[in-house]
Length: 442
Image (cartoon, rainbow, N blue to C red; front, side, top):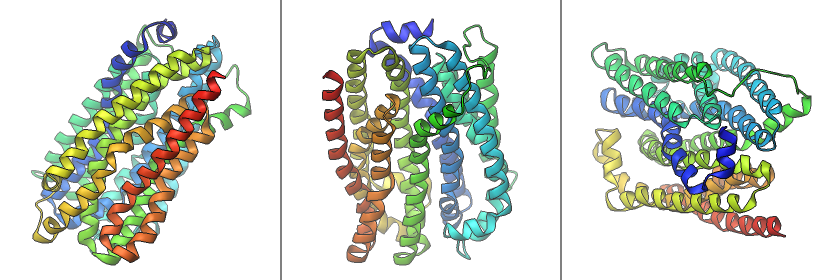
C-alpha cells in the first residue's frame, strides 16, 4: 500500500521519486501564463503584454482556489491515512471536491458580472483596457478548469500517482502552446485566442487526471461517512496558506503595477511582466519541492516518525537552495536574456532591464528556502507558523518596503523591495525552524 511505502522506504528515495513529477505538475501555472505571455508579447505587442500583467492576479485567484482545497484536504487525508483511518481520508477528499466546486461557481458569477470595475481596480488604462476586454471573459468562464487542474493534481499525487500528474500537466501545456500559436498567428484571433487556448489546455489536464480514478491503484473514494462541520474549518485553515501564496502574489503585482505606473508608465508594467513571469517559473519549482515533500511529511507526522521528518526537511532545504541558485546566477550575468525571451524589446525596455532583473533576481536565492519553510509547517499541521511566513514573504514586507523605498529611490526602490522582504523572512524562518525542532525533540 502507498501509505506503508511512505512510512518505511528511505526518505531520500521517496523524495527524489516525487520531485521531478511534482515540479512538472506545478509547471501548469507557468506553462499557461508563460505561453500566453510569450505569444502575446511577440505576436501582439508590449501593450498587450502589459494588459496581461494587469489581469495576472486573476490567475492567482483561479489556481489559488484549487490549492486552497487541494492542499488543505490532501494534507489532512494523508495524515488520516498515516494514522490508519482510511475512511476519514475519503471524507476529506469528498468534502474538498464539494467546497472547490461551490467556490468556483460563486467566483465565476462574481467575476463575470463585475469584470469591468474589477479590471479598473487592478490598474487598467486606456491603452490596456481593450486588450483586457478581449482576454478576460474567456479565462473567467474557464475558472473551474484552472482551479480543478491544480486541485486534482494535488490529490492524485498524494494518492501515489505523481507521474500521471506530470503527464497531465505536460500534455495540457503542450496543447496550450500549440493552440496559442495557431489561434494568435494563422487564425489571427488575438488576445481571445490566447485566452481560449489556456482554458482548453487546462481541460486537457483535468481529463488525463481523471483516468486515475479508473485505475487499479486509485485510493480516492467519495464518501461523507465521517463528516463533521469542523472538518470544513480544518480544510480551510490548512489550505489557506497555499491559497495565500497565490493571492499575496496577486496583491503584490497589483501594488507594484500601481507604483510603476506612477514612476515609469506602461513601460514599467511591461518590464515587471517580464520579471513576474520569470519569477512564476521559480515559484513553480519551489512549489514542486514542497509538494514532493508534503505526502512524506504529512504521512510520517500522522505516524509520529519525527526522525524521518527531519530528513525530509534537510533534503528540501538543500534542493531549494540548489535550484534557486540557477536563476539567480543567470539574472546577474545575462539579465537581458529574460527580457528577450518575452518581448521584442525597444530601447526604453532594454535600458530598464539589467538593473531591474539583477536587483529582483538576487532575492531568488533565498526564496526557495522561505517557501519550503512555509510548506513544511503546513504539512506538519502548524498553520499559524505557515501563515505568518507566507504573509511576511508574500505580501507584508514587500509592500512595506515598496511604500518606503519608492519615494526615496523611485523605480530602483520598487525592484529592491521583494529581495529585501525575502532576506528578512529568511531570518524569521530559520528561527521558527530551530524552535520547532527543539520542541519536537523535547
